[in-house]
Length: 463
Ligand SMILES: Cc1cc2nc3c(=O)[nH]c(=O)nc-3n(C[C@H](O)[C@H](O)[C@H](O)COP(=O)(O)O)c2cc1C
Image (cartoon, rainbow, N blue to C red; front, top):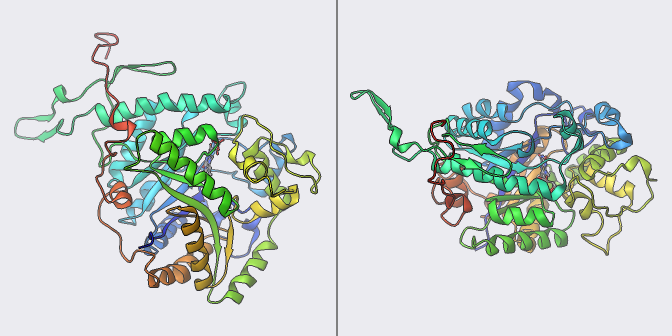
């Protein structure tokens, strides 16, 4: 029996997102990102299509690597203007019952204490449907605007992430016992203080002596997503991620990345609960192959090469304004993201990409493949990518919003259901229960379940 195909929608609280230039398409409505109605309509649509969730990307900086200024990013709306992703969740949760929410938050620039409470709040308000895409950032401009001279070194950010998660696990998993909250009106006791524990954390980067401010939420720790796939990123994912988002331009590159992250999880003793992997893809479909291909050609006319290069420059930290469009993309190590540049260079030495080819490729749907065709052709391609790489599903980018998602729900979901490869109803429970058919809590093999509070008080009397 082949695995069912899972779908996530990949979006951001901004104009466009992964298809630079496509906001100019007459049917694109992504500039409505400022309105609640845009998001509630999208949430309803995705739930109708039985998507696992909506994955909301985020960056805290500007794409100012291209030409050394933010001009191209501003001119073409390359992930700027960008609003906060977490604030969308309550509105979308209010109009849905099952849809999951994977929100991106960069741990590099905010103390874990307030973030722990924000996520617990969302987990309460959504009835346990929230997940966190753990990112460490890649834009130097984010660091500079937060008062730092430059962003931390690539691998150091992952070291910081280890301690950040330790603090969060202590707050989410250890601070409040399951039966700490009594809500007993007869005795007038709301909470039993003996069952609420200061976490007494003092590490290299963070000191948190006290208790978590929120009572335990349905999942306690939100479902943990991760998307960095450099060598260091995979080790981190192997240890912490319950779901991994990947972007790769070919089946070969993707398969190697999937095998690596599963091996990293096994090394951490997580073979019984390996991470689910979703691969980025853009699906362009319609009633027939001809209709889908016509749509593809029409979309392609809106790709903007300068916009695509501004995006690529931000991801990779390499200023592509300095290269001829015919030059070959070469790998350079720096402190931005590493896997984006690698996927157009060293990840597949047999394939050389020119700057123009890379820009045209990411111009539609970012770093994943573009699958074009009627419902049957798309389903064949999705099945092929699933079965040849071992992924669990797709993280679907859009070209034109919300049209891309409407087309998938209308044409592709019914065909996959007919083939027995897509669910026909949602399972019950929290996001974690839906994804893993298990408990709402982190599995016992996960490191979040083995953190312990140090029993010795840090600073007596000051908790
Ligand atoms: C599908 C996908 C989505 C991502 N979304 C975000 C995001 O929203 N915000 C962000 O700062 N980084 C995002 N990233 C970047 C990674 O989380 C990571 O920070 C980056 O790839 C650098 O890490 P690496 O060098 O280990 O790959 C994403 C990466 C992928 C593959």
